Length: 377
Ligand code: A3P
Ligand code: MG
Ligand code: MG
Image 1 (tube, rainbow, N blue to C red):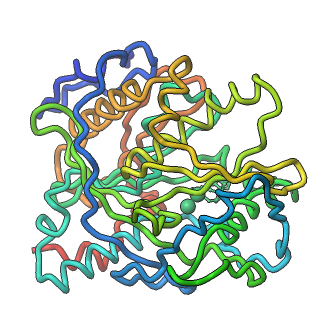
Image 2: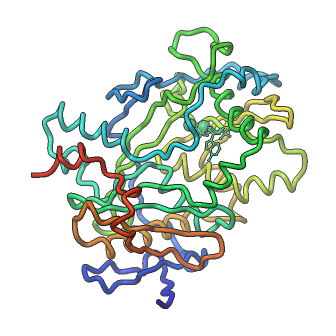
């Protein structure tokens, strides 16, 4: 099959199966103005407790502890309590299940059908899948694989880790695992359970089972565009203005090239993750190599994009995402919960392609029976 590169806004969706089978990943194919992207609107929120039980509320939402932002310097030991890390099995493959549970519970409590409860979504996924796809024109290291199923006129997108990623996980060093802990430990230093709690509780075990998620809808592209519904884990809310805040750790910059590297690579992921759900601010814990946060500073999501102008353009990412979603619409033309398609990209590939998975490979049939049965006529 020949590659058929095409630009974001230049790709016309067709109802036939004759459309392109691939999208070029070349950034210059997607230059141009930012496509229409309606401000993400929060339509719901849900929480997962220690047992991953889903509740239709904000019980797990944390409040930003603002004091460290005012300090000239801090000394948060991110390794503290590492031995007691109450960690989710990293090999467990996360599907859309908890999000689908929330959708189902909404439909039950509001007595609504799937179309109403999903705001007529054409695509449903985690925010992380959109971040991965959209960053591809600038990515050269990490591949990804998304399983896609069309059911009830909705294309569900679920990421499955690539074989390479699986191998990396299996061979992760002690230091890599420790560094993963650092990110969660920082969240504990920076958040309060309730708005009136005085100081964070930093001696209890850190766990990454509990989560708070925001559910947003948005539309991408001119005309009817693509109607998206996605959920994203959200770290906390700033009580001073009720805006969601993303927390991140980052190695302190010691020279220009380190800073340059940050804006070139990591900043794009940060920007996409926050921009997709409309989060205005990231609070960054700048750490040293020993895992001590030395300074906590805010970063405006908008400024990340302007500071990265020499390296990447958000417009390219969104034009590309629009093309990929058009490609999926072209390829997945019939509802069939047993037909799984792979959307995939790996380092070195010139294109993102869609191909059907083997029917026998049931690993990727990620729509649970209880979900399908609940909404079948
Ligand atoms: P940092 O981002 O500060 O390193 P998030 O930032 O998305 O809220 O994720 C919280 C933390 O989860 C991260 O903190 C990191 O420790 C861990 N984490 C998230 N994604 C990861 C990944 N792909 N690999 C390893 N750790 C990850
Ligand atoms: Mg998070
Ligand atoms: Mg975070």
